[in-house]
Image 1 (cartoon, rainbow, N blue to C red):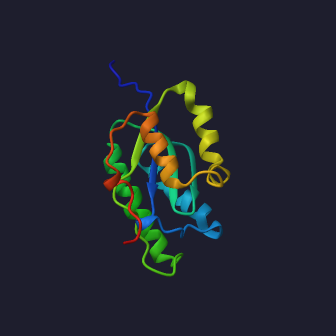
Image 2: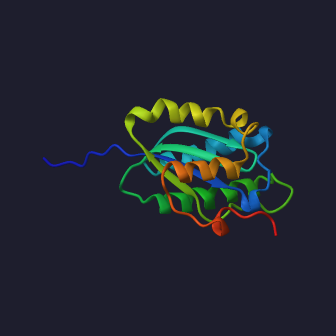
Length: 153
């Protein structure tokens, strides 16, 4: 009997609209649990999740039956509804358009998990934009500065 076997590890980074620092320690764990439930309900495996005030890092074992784009559309839509319904921010919450998605081999799993788990310490030394552009350069992703996650205009 034929089956499909995959080993797809994806590190996803997405940010709050205009990179506003609104993700608070008091409710970020609830947000993480909500996002984990969305990902698991779509038959993916969450390996790590963490956030720093304006963005989220999510590391998953991807089930190839769903595209990353569709998963992210669902995660952003449902999690923003959760935040707004529970009035966790003083104003309407929105995620910025787009995301970064980077693939890793099985041997990199422990290092990526450690990196995600230490986000708050990491951002004491580096801004989000510095971190994000480092990822883009590391993975040799061509990008235009004009389209990197925008500040409030």
